[in-house]
Image (cartoon, rainbow, N blue to C red):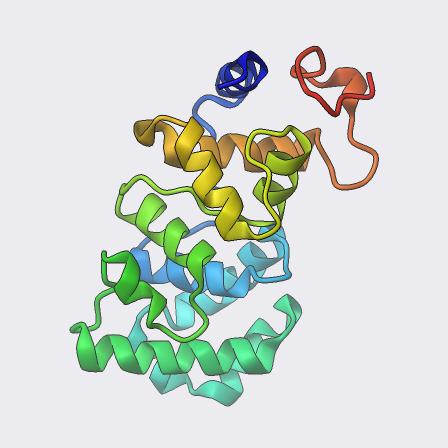
Length: 207
């Protein structure tokens, strides 16, 4: 592996050690719903919505009692409320019918749930069940390519590339390092290269 990649990872760990998810949740089901809601929406906005939703419905049974129409109304600020509500209701039904109301630990089982793609499944397995995984969201995809840690045209290519260069026991932590770095410094537009702790080793640094 190129030395600059090792140094980038070392500096990311040093800077963001202990970073945790911004989404607020108290169970695997709450996390699953929050991640579904986070598609094309900020975590801050999702947290504002779930502060209203979860006291009313924080289990598959309660979601079904709430109903899709009321659910759509509550989650409207997150955008795509009709499709997200439909997925959440369908997922709640499947969890009750096939998994005893519990969120499955298995990655492939999670992928069977409506509205759950690789990113969501990786977040849930990693954060809720402490199984090493690297979820590739927009921040991780952008940074992996920009920093040349793992270049790829698709999230899956980037995910595989990151898995190859990051020790498995650090996959989940590295996911958070990259997200926080993308939020705080390495922004999509006008990255703050002048204050970036990785500026001396990043191939794309403009500092």
